[in-house]
Length: 535
Picture 1 (cartoon, one colour):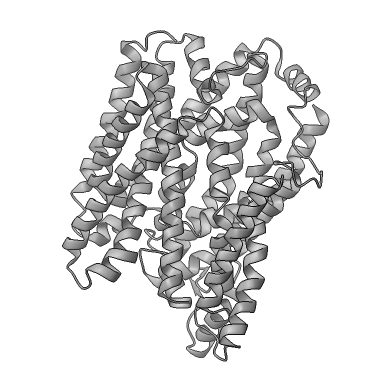
Picture 2 (cartoon, rainbow, N blue to C red):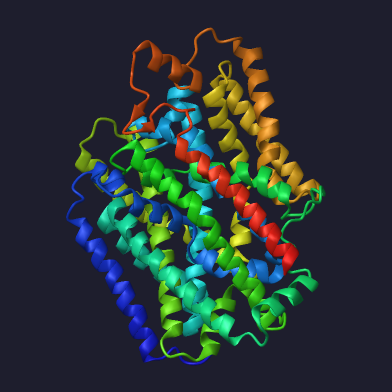
């Protein structure tokens, strides 16, 4: 690749300075730990929605999505088809518990429902998985910088970490959300530009190109095979990955913490609804880019498929295009990275430091502690980021595989809390251990595809947790107020309003607008079927 050029560098530097200035602007409003975690609770729902979308639609999707479909075809879209159903579940079951509690750490629920050990286990799982995903974001960002400048990628990882750390320490969650808004828009503009020039430069008309891709097996979207060894099938999309993504978006501090900044539960739900409707289009565009690149480059091998988008931007030769694309990827990645650092420091401070080491200190003290933990986490994610840099496959695929080891336990711990009257902490933790063991056996001793790991962990965890709970602690006579049934009973006995501004406050009740998500999900399946049949 040739010189990056003065114009491209100017575009990139202006974007980065803009991010830093925004962080500096919001830093004036961060005077307490609560400001750092939750902001002022005055952020509009649409901004939170953009932020939730941008949390995972960052460099991992912009670079890793096309890389994944370039190698595997558009069938991998089935991994991401399920967001409408996922968001339906999240805003009906998970979000009311977390928003109504008024806490900053969503893992407080586990302590209230089961006990301190359950909360600690869930928090540790979050910190492990989030460190890995943050490292993947960091790696993807370093890959961009290394690709365009030629600097060594491990050095780029360290430099980007320092930049992200400085940015994160300034503005707290408010700066994170508003930066996500701007950078997600920039990212979509960059994707739109790439899509336009790719369509323009295809050697054949689009429909002819798609027909040839179909003949080469790259457009087989709806695969109904029951073979558990196949990654992307209809069944993995509507069963296994529904379970996976429900955990990612419903039991993930980094995602839910954004919704907790909303001024009402209605706004919190609307922010998630935005994600439920928008995600399909975003992922479809990114993955369609990959198969179109396959046609454009005649399926040639790349040293690293994650650089295909950047290579195309460079090949077009349009002045400033590479700078725009690079700035979009880099800035969006920094936004996602600072989100993770903020959430990791929040959980560390609230679930461990404040609870076990420094109780009843001032809010100013916890703010200072949170910022120190942010520094520590920034240092820790460098190690797995360097390990990720040794991989030449799709970073999005790699990250999703790694995360699948843990989500079964997280999903089980919450759904058992919501619905099981007789599950106790001791039984739950033994079930979690059994679920981990089952996933490890499936991953190392069988050929079962990774999307099913969550389902395997869940299927093993649930009956063992309930059975061991009954064996060790017997049947529970009282219904916990932190179950769905307990919540309904409490609202009924205390004559509490079940709605606020037209939105259900009580968990388990479905808002009318949520049914549109189900309709939208069916419509997307029909649209993909029509696309597959008629091209």
